[in-house]
Image (cartoon, rainbow, N blue to C red; front, side, top):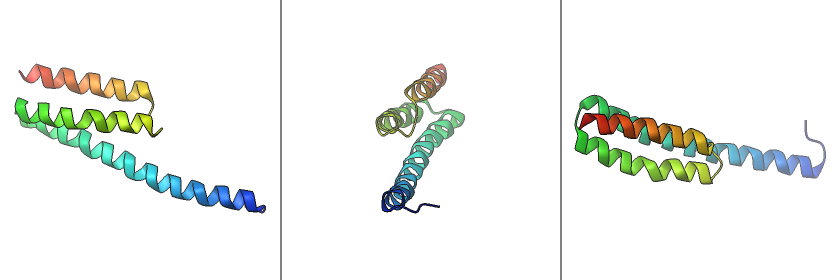
Length: 87
């Protein structure tokens, strides 16, 4: 357990940061889920719109340190190829 004032402060900061990152990660997953649902629905225009909305959200997660750059790039690549296959 944290004993020094600095360690106590760091523990408080970590708790706050964890909550913020958890919310960001959840928001990203929601955007990705809407793209997935649009793809399974088979409507290409809805899927393209959902993908356009999801891309900046993914990149924001990378910028904030929630997700690794390559992970976001991989997800975008796979989703965009599936959306493109819809036609």
